[in-house]
Image 1: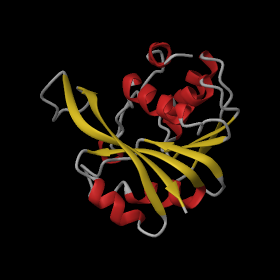
Image 2: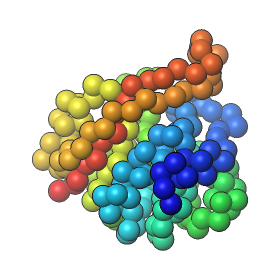
Image 3: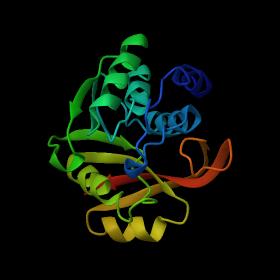
Length: 197
């Protein structure tokens, strides 16, 4: 499946019904999800097992399945989001195991971790448990952070992982919460590929 086709299919994935601002529940836009997943696919990182940390309504997990990954687990602490994720996966005929728990409590070992963690806009450091767990359970890690986060990410993973690539992207955020003033805002973000040690 080509990247543009993947993006078009992922547009069908329904987002959060009642997003929680404290959890920074922003749906990963199809264009960003397709970029991350196709990058992982081209690196051969979707051939084995994949974990989607903080999967929300499932766009990254579902996209991995559409690109041929057979063993996929989506992890999120919000049972309502997982219910939507299950429906999304069913509608797109993708087989995914869903786990409802805090990412800190999840155990396992995976070839690849994909994630769009909280950026820490509501509470500084919200992305750290995700990076910590990704380093613990994954070999290749694909993660999205605010632009300008390279020094933080490099320092946080020092001795435990290496950044192999950084790709800059525009992340469109639709008007979701009352404090948003624009219908769509474009945030500069960075997509990281990290190999754990």
